[in-house]
Length: 422
Image 1 (cartoon, one colour):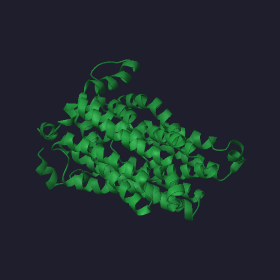
Image 2: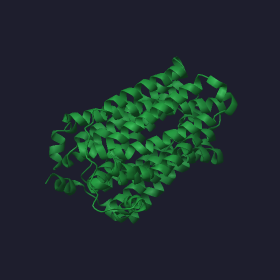
Image 3: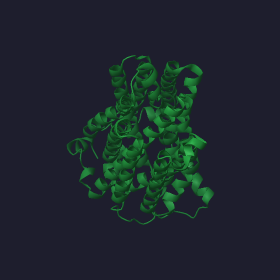
């Protein structure tokens, strides 16, 4: 596949009907889960006014996520991926119903146990997210021909990021103007719609395994596959540590409250700012995919992401903070799309679930652990110094990875995509 073909038809995967069902279902459910995340986070912060507990919400989701991730990859490669997605959507539905139940005050559970019930539901949500992610990634790769993998990664990222704009913004606005109970009811409706859309996916055969493996062998094979591939390993590691230390999203409520002195409706908008930048960059990359000098572009964008975070920490103005968050989302998206394309190109079909699970441990959990790190660092160093520290660590990690992973630094995906087409 040459780059001219991708530029000529940036909407190639959107012409595939099943991909449209898949991507819209993912959009709806992502809006719902991000609305839930921002509302639960604000509830806990309003109840406690403690940035450490706000960061702790990430840890409570990350621990069960990590625990379940490898098992979910094994499950995605052994059982019907469509059934796994549907079952997990039902689990999401139960979680939202439980949050609505708590918020309505039935049984005085919150009065008796404080924030503990919310943290339990957050943990169950982490399990659900771990279960669904490998199956989603594997299904997407089955829907789309190999020659369109870069294009599908771009649109998958774009749609997710649009949802990441809409979800937090709607969550903040609905919480402010119609109340928390009505907000959870909207989330409930969106989850049901997403579940319905996923039903339109075709039922596919379970991937044929090359050899019979025990559970332990199956779980470890995904890890071994990633660790034997220097490009995969270095790309995932770079993204993981950049997100772990560089992200300031978890502390946005505290910046909004203590530094910028704005309310939840503006917090939701700020929370959406990185995604706004990501959407803009995704559209650009649909026309100009980062397949030429891929490694150099990856390291440059990770570096600029760290710089954006440092400047955000120093900002005292709402609009400047918004611009910096938007820029951080633009730079981060290049990294995300490159990583997704690498995973799709370098992973065989019968390993997609397990490799996606390893990816989710590297990347997905780093968001939540990064939230905990942000809260802990803010408690120890102070709010602004903690974000400056995180951004500086991102710059250091980018420099070290560029030095020790020359294969990734020199990577150019054009030849690999041509092989996929042939």
